[in-house]
Image 1 (tube, helix red, strand yellow):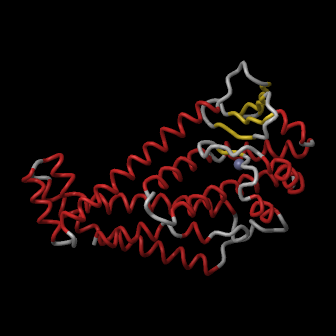
Image 2 (tube, protein in one colour; image 1 turned 90 degrees about the vertical axis):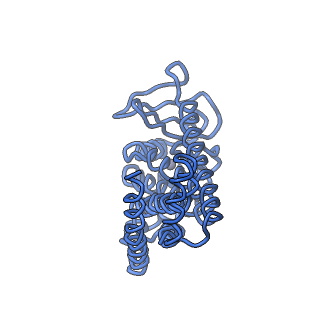
Image 3 (cartoon, protein in one colour; image 1 turned 180 degrees about the vertical axis):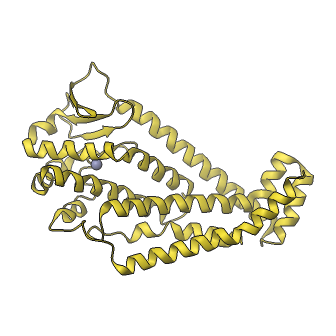
Length: 305
Ligand SMILES: [Zn+2]
């Protein structure tokens, strides 16, 4: 049963790697890739916790409780204590990696927020546009109670009026759609699933989908030509931390410019993609349903204790 939960989790992380720009609106893909990563993280967390239960209960409840759980698990799981210890190690390392990533992101965001005495601050509708006194090519946004859109003076000087509007609209889209929270969720899931080989690719696809989503909004505001020009000017942008949404320079530049061509990024998802997603959802649901009796059995045995 737990094997099915874990399989559902591993399968749920897959949809993101099938994304190509042009196959559906990037907002839809951002939703699919992020949700599938979150679902994968949840399923794997539950699956590993079930497998690790004998070891975890030994730690928190003593030998008698662990023995009850061990006997119970043998009805459902192969491998016994060896599997339990392996699951405990993966669970602990995944939780630690997630916690570390979230703490690191929070610290980096605090570093990237610009204090009032640095740079030129211009109030805009719902955010502050800040021009930093640096020739480094950078542009990013910092969400929070006082949202900021930050751009380097060197980059700003190289942009014409329309391109600057496109960059600001791109960063504003990140703020308006709360992409910071999406990035945190993607980062947390990627940490939890560090041992799943295709997670990194899915997480990257989710981040690129967020960029394309902001590009799509910016193109609607400033026009695709201005945005394309801004992306090319910013192609040497300093690689930004994953902790904040940014204009990521050459990262996925070809994909993003391709999306701006013609009508790409506006179409609905193709039938085949929808079929794959529906299949994944069914398998994931099956995993959850089959885990139900096991969870119920665990709870019914543990509650009296
Ligand atoms: Zn961006």
